[in-house]
Image 1 (cartoon, rainbow, N blue to C red):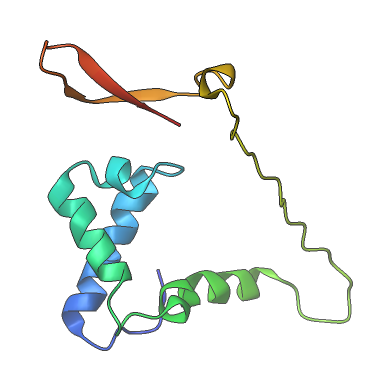
Image 2: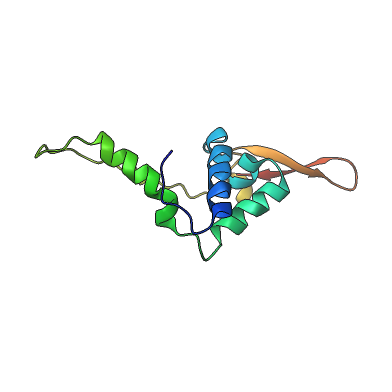
Amino acid sequence: MRWLAMPDARLDKRLRHLVEQLAKGVGRSIPWACQDWAAAKAAYRFFSNDRVREEQILAGHFLATRERIPCGEELFLVVHDTTEFSYKREDMAAVGLVSKGSVRKDAHGRLVYFTT
């Protein structure tokens, strides 16, 4: 994998580890992909670091995309799906359950779920 070097070797190592974690959990949120609170907190700390820039993280993706596109005068389309879903309702129960995962147990030992 290629990307711009981070300003610090530790940040570069952390980015590589984070990319591996997120790749194993494609489509999952950071807490689910990182699998524990310490790793999720480290990921959020990494992304909020003032020395980490978006272009550094995405440089490898942009380079790989550029290499896959043929050189020349040919026209090609870049299709982008801008679909968004909004589940906001006055009556939240009317939305129904899209997916759920347990987070903890309540005082009576029953699982407490979050919904997405």
